[in-house]
Structures are given as structure tokens and as C-alpha cells.
Image (tube, rainbow, N blue to C red; front, side):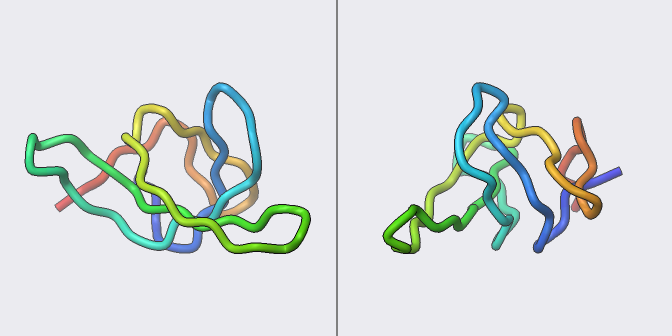
Amino acid sequence: MTFKVGDAVRLKSGGAQMTISKLFKSQEGHEMVQCIWFDKKPRQHRAAFVIESLEGNGARSSAGARLTD
């Protein structure tokens, strides 16, 4: 099972629901995802996270998934 662009995720530590917009590997070889989300204003935010810090949050998500090449 893998995370896919469009999956709904959340940080394991909590926070806003985010949508995966990109899957990639860092220069150090870490599996990463770029996510977007909106705050209450609503302003769009975008940030990259190590894949292990995320969990699935919704019907299209696959919790504990890994990036595949």
C-alpha cells in the first residue's frame, strides 16, 4: 500500500487535515511528501514532511504506507 497524490493525511502528532500534492525522496534518501492545507482565514499552506510522520485520514488514505518507485 502506498500514499498517493490526493490522499488525506494528518501528522501523527495531530493538526490540520492535509492533502498530499507530491511524493519524492530527499537528497538524503528520506521518503517525503509535500502537503497542502487551508487555515481558518482560509489561506493555503504548503510544506514537506517525512512520510513516517504522517497517518492516513480519510477514505482514500493508506495509513502506514510507503512511497514506491
